[in-house]
Image 1 (cartoon, helix red, strand yellow):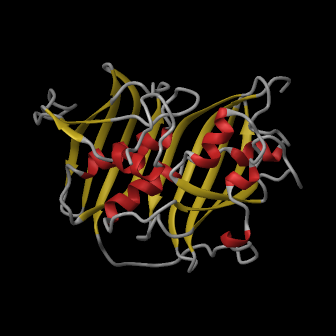
Image 2 (tube, rainbow, N blue to C red):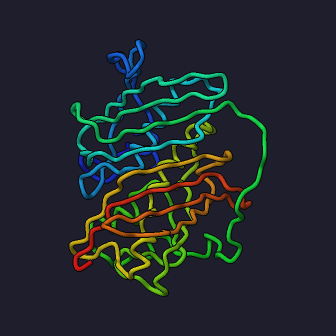
Image 3 (cartoon, rainbow, N blue to C red):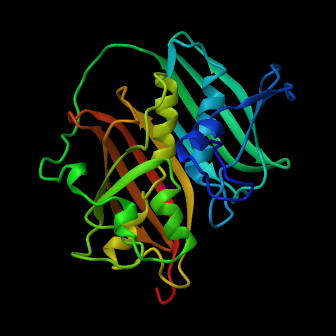
Amino acid sequence: MTAHSEPGSAPDDPLADLLHVFELTPRPAGSAGRGSSAPLDVFEGPSQWQPNGRVFGGQVLAQSLIAAQRTVPDEKVAHSMHAYFLRAGKVELPIEFQVDRSHDGRSFATRRTEALQNGVPIMSTISSFQTVDSGLDHQLPMAADLPDPESLPTLAESLAGIEHPAARFWANGRPFDVRHVPSPIFVRVEGAHVAHQALWMKTIGPLPDDPALHRAALAYASDLGILEPIFRRHGLPMSTPGMKIASLDHAMWWHRPGRADEWLLYAMESPTAVGGRGLAQGRFYDRDGRLLASVAQEGMTRVPGY
């Protein structure tokens, strides 16, 4: 089965589609990077179909990380990434990734990556990689009072009966099985209006045993639902008429290795929203309670009447 049923449509196999967009193709080197005589490393990757016609931000985060990772030695692994969303990407166009080898040290390496479509930047990231080391070790604990993912409805079950292309895609067209605690806020906000929630998630099938790929998959997943606590706090469904939402910047830190094809808890909260912007923070835990990664994202949150 192919990843897509036809051009410009939802994927037949969302997981195969995810792995397809992770396969970046090397291109001829570009001009020298800023402050460097070394040429840029250039890669190209496809875009996933989305019902709104705009490239999913998590896809570009993951691809930017993969492009940067391919320019550092295997013994150095990603530990942080800071990204700015510059423009909305178009799903019908491929994306070019230009990687500047900003710094190579004994323990750390830094890469600056520009993602472009038709020569226009859509995302700018700086990623840092570190040789695995030992040191102090502590973490915030995972909440102990949350239901197991197996006891929660799937998105397909939660969105059953909603006849809308976006709802059908959220339910069946994504490569991750996502289950909300409490219930999703796509069409209504049930329960207390609080600025926190959690998602259980994993890919819908197994992934190859490549730690770098699992970090990239986690980067992809980190953009799923991260801004929802902002709107849950105000009792606003994501389908509120006239509401405009856009990711502005995104930061991620990888702490411990883990697998994106096993159940992970994405605990998220919003400490503040003001001036048409909202801040959200998240933490990924595995089922053993190990803190795998931390996330922060600020988004544009324009709501009529506010």
